[in-house]
Amino acid sequence: MENKIDYTLLDRLVAKIDKGGEPPDDGDMERLSALEARFDAVLPTLATRTDIESVKSEIHKSSGETHKWMLGTVIGLFLGFGGLFLAMSNALKPAAPQPAAAPIVIYSQPALPIEHPQAPPAAK
Image 1 (tube, rainbow, N blue to C red):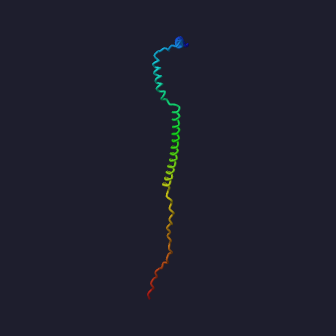
Image 2: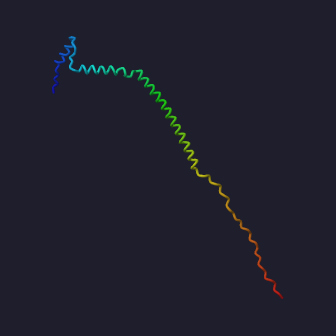
Image 3: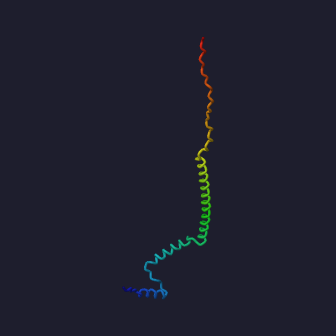
């Protein structure tokens, strides 16, 4: 496949510009001037190096503050959950066993001698 480029039109345009003439206006000049106007309006609103540096320092400062809050929160949660654990372990601890009561001991009494009734003496 051959690429044929027509350099004659380009050569004529370059020759016209070299002689001090204006470039040909094919309707794109209005578009170009509109773009230049837009860039002239936008360019002053773009951030400068000092703006970017100030934003960077603010982000760095807020990052440090965030780290402090995160560390404080983690420590607070650790202490809170530790206290909750201790409270629950004390609340659920089984009651201390009561010392065993002394057993009831019943001592048997020595048996009293049984007296047998005597027969009345015989009458004579």
